[in-house]
Image (cartoon, rainbow, N blue to C red; front, side, top):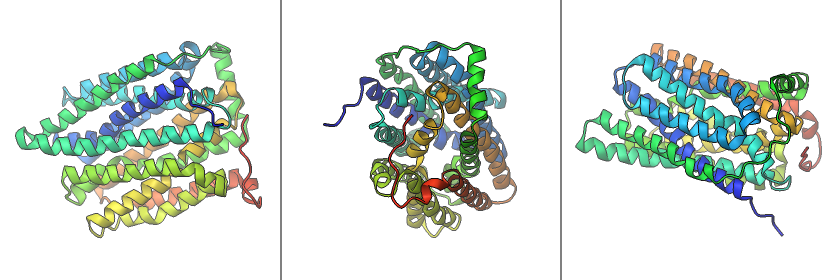
Length: 405
């Protein structure tokens, strides 16, 4: 008999959908909003880079905060910060206030990214864990898909009646509204008892334990390389489609929502793939097969071909994410999971911020295509690092059973 998902998991999945809708709006429309406000690609890159950097840095604070006040209050704080960031962004064109709005929303999203993996692990059994991580990944991408699709339709519809930039601001306001509505399911979460509330010294010992763990360090390096590669191209997808390929907003939203639907589909299929190939081989297969489609995006051959390339790249590259999260949590002691989760967020978002700055500079100074070549190289390096980290798993004749600590 299959175990039922806990009420906490169901509440978090609902909140995750709402916050992911907000994140989807940020991902697709902030760059377009800044461009329409008269800012060049390098400022867009700097703004997105600061947002991502703040997500990285606040993750360290978030891990300590979660240990002190619990996941529920931390998630509430995150939702509030995202809402305030969106509200400020929608009411200013001042570059410094725009940067600050990016920092605020970065703080909010860091609470989610830092506490998520630990919360899912604590509220699911060992046998449920891959399924729960996959469901969470699917719900997250469903939120992104909805934001891209509905946002594109809304922007196109409103731009007939009001100036285009005001239509974009309306979509941004919708993203902020979804963030504040996420309070409702978060309030229904039953806070687990904090088994061992750690002071600052004990919290820092958790980082010391991880830094002394060679496998955990190698895992973080792998995570960082993926982050830099993604940063150079992913935040600029909407700008690339709209300004490099001259595609209308509704079509841009359609292509991006189609690609996010690939992530939804991948999230549902990855548990089956993991059973067939094993968790580690599934990650490698997905990452390697995504690379040809990433290359094809840089050589567009019509809207249909671009849409298919986006769909396949997003599906394959992101399918392994639930497994990667689960594998990471299994590398450390349960008390150190918040620390590792924060370092995963830090390593990914810090290098992603660097990648965004580099990608924005290259696109502004040279062309939109060149960053894709660097991303391909970084993804190949990351795949090699992952194989090296789990090399013992790849010489086994059959998939290994789940290992849960």
